[in-house]
Image 1 (cartoon, rainbow, N blue to C red):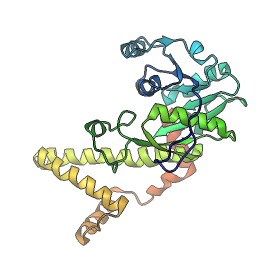
Image 2 (cartoon, rainbow, N blue to C red):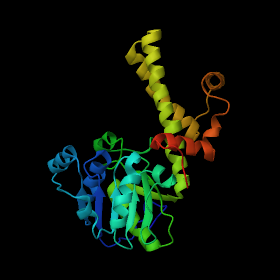
Image 3 (cartoon, rainbow, N blue to C red):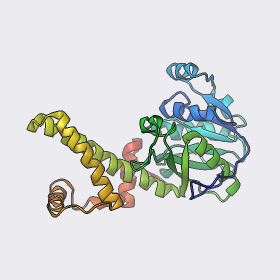
Image 4 (tube, rainbow, N blue to C red):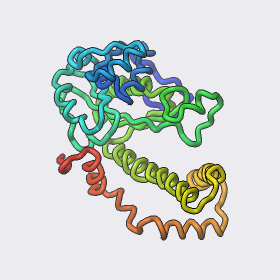
Length: 296
């Protein structure tokens, strides 16, 4: 499918291809396999762990060896943990057919230069945005799908640093299928995707989410506020805080702005923006992938 910035447009269909999912019995492997199984693509599922093989069998998918899955595949999806992506790619990439695409689901290993390279194998990275907090949901299935890939629509950010637009269209078709339903696939560089994940969404957003949980615990267990009252106040105010700050829905009161300033002074370090420096990005990815250092 071709990229479109307008979700109302119908992307151009690409021919069905052979897709191999390596790590198909893992957490993300199961998620992407469910959607790929429903597509017109020919899909092979590679899994080595007995537990993963059992999970696949329970949903009607048969595990094959990695070598069998990769042989002749047009797109190879590595749905394995970040910490082993480099090692797995070393065995998978040499076995891929010329002109095929290696697709990973997180940018850290690609950014760190850990993935095996071949001139005749294109590489893509695609990470789901998950359904937006501002998404309009109308059905119970959409409300229940917080992660995405089932009923609620989401966007995807992907990197494909290769000039072959036909191959990128094939990659996008597979990306839209495995993360569907998808509105837009936003194309960026590998480095830009790494800034988004982990810096923007894990280092900042997920950390703030955990901070909110910790603050709720203190409110209930240290101060003694009834838990249901504290949750009611917090959950409603998280919604208004996000709409006011990210969408400009309503101005905060003067008293609220003073309290916000106090919060910054008490909680946020003055030099927090350093996390957007290249050396800090290298530092956090080194820690995430348990590396000595990043060598590119």
